[in-house]
Image (tube, rainbow, N blue to C red; front, top):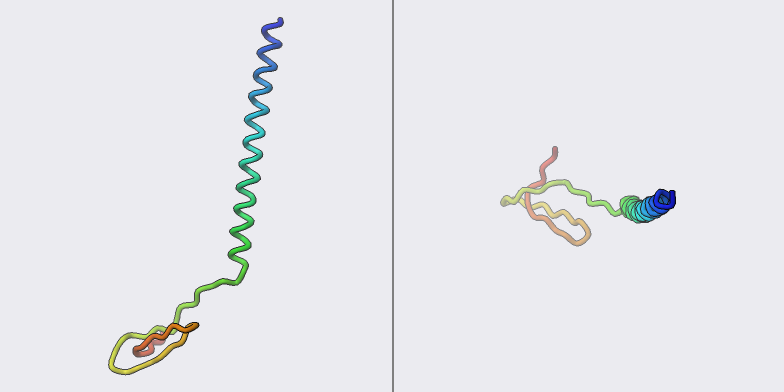
Length: 75
């Protein structure tokens, strides 16, 4: 009977430790997901267009200091 009790205590301890690690991992994953959601919601977007193709004609498009020289194409 004593061996069964010791076995039960050891098994309970192992299960408790494993459960504790699982909860910690879940908390870390939740924090990472929240950081990703905050980063996506911050409004930092990349907007592409209108497109210019390099030709003899010139179009200058300014995107925050970035100039493209070419012929404007509308899609």
